[in-house]
Length: 439
Image (tube, rainbow, N blue to C red):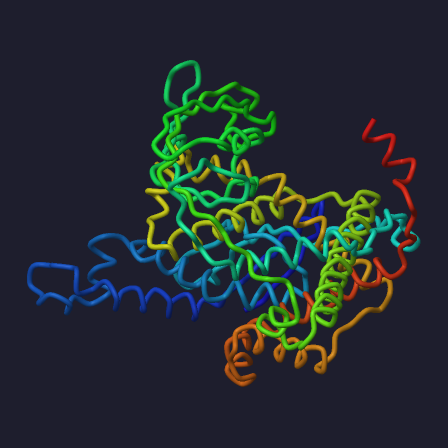
């Protein structure tokens, strides 16, 4: 096999792959052996008709198409590697020569990684995140723990109060017509939790068991259902059950029961420490997201259409895998969603572009800063995954063995993200450029 490379415009290349005439004949013979048992020719037992006889009867090209497909499937991966090109799309195949006694020649038009015009990635301004933990936040966290350990007492002689757990029957109406998803029976609700839309739970207070009443609300403008967003609605409700939560005493005994500490003071300090760690982790993630987002926005890449299309198809393929893993046929999902695979691929364009920009820009930062990953980095990643999945390292190693190169690339990208964030400049308020965008 020989491979030649022709550079085209817009980060496209054309590979010309030539397979020997001998290998082409072997491919034809392999197709003949697969198909001969299906051939029924008078004078020959099924499966015993010689290849030359079949080619004379049906034409010498009868096995060409399948032989060509077999050769392309078997030779293209090696040809792509031999080309030395960083290919990022599915190939557009065209057979240019096929015939008995001749080399089999085909071309593969593919996209390669485009050049990246990298914007500013050092000293990017980001909004400083406040990681201060207030006494109120500590008290709120402890109150959650108190509620988890609360005793339950069913109430029959008083109306609903804030903080009660209730069972509620309800049905929602818009313009006097019931709407989908607006009905519940014996629905468990903690009054005051904010689980329902604003203004709903407050109207449950002072309602008695068995009382039928109406709750009037307006759905938020950003509500998930476009049909209900910003619209007034009426819910017909009945409280079926009231349960009072009796909180335990907040003292040393409670602290020792719910934590490793013997005093309330130590327990509160630990709650504050954990909240601080949580805030700092969130702040670091936000810092990375803001900084990386600005670097990508300031960079430019001309993404080849073939590369974009391949990424769009991959996104839909990931969704298909997720759907089928849940026991549902993807065709049924498409029918339920009233769409087609092609429409989903088209709708994935923006997401695909974001993914490509993110990866290419981060790879370029890693290249500029000579950021690499080591075997030690890889081993540490395996250990972390082993802890997450609660498996031994060797089991994890075998599972991810075929993805080692991909994982090494991901680790390099994460290092690039950390580099950008570490070199970002934190400011107390939004940079002027961002303020102008939001005005």
